[in-house]
Length: 171
Image 1 (cartoon, one colour):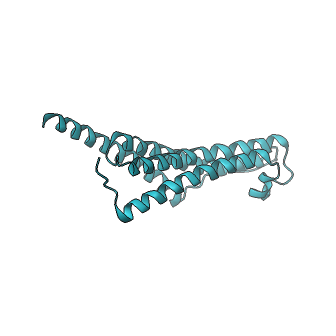
Image 2: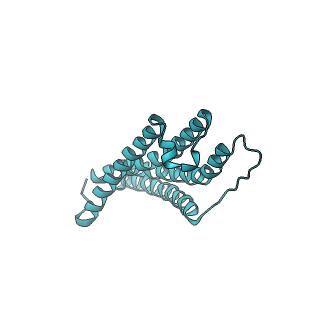
Image 3: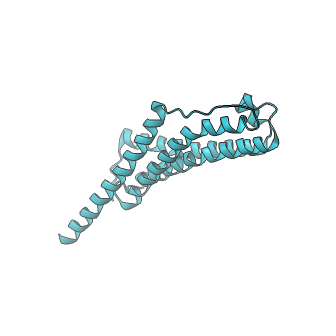
């Protein structure tokens, strides 16, 4: 297969692949830090001073679950860049990673909306009164839209690859 990635584009794809793998390692490391060191929760969330063991475990679980979509999105980015570097830019191998990145971004967007209220509920557990509000920012919406666009782009490219394969058989 001809190498369609030349010059600056190849450098950008190499950087994207590196960023993807670094993000995977950082997310997994952060999850391990949260789980392994009891003081990590208070470091990242100073309001958690003096909470009980159950609340601490709940905050750790929320933090780790919040990292999972990011790990999947970063992994898909790294794998997609690797497939592109192998010269399979428009093949089924490349196209399958786009929807995975899209669904991961959508999950990350929804989780980032829900994490704040969940943390508030855990911290307020046992209090006499409290309120929880859900806030949606432009960053949340941008993440959701980007995920949706990646899913659509993946489906369109998959259809184009099927059509190209059918046409290749007739010639």
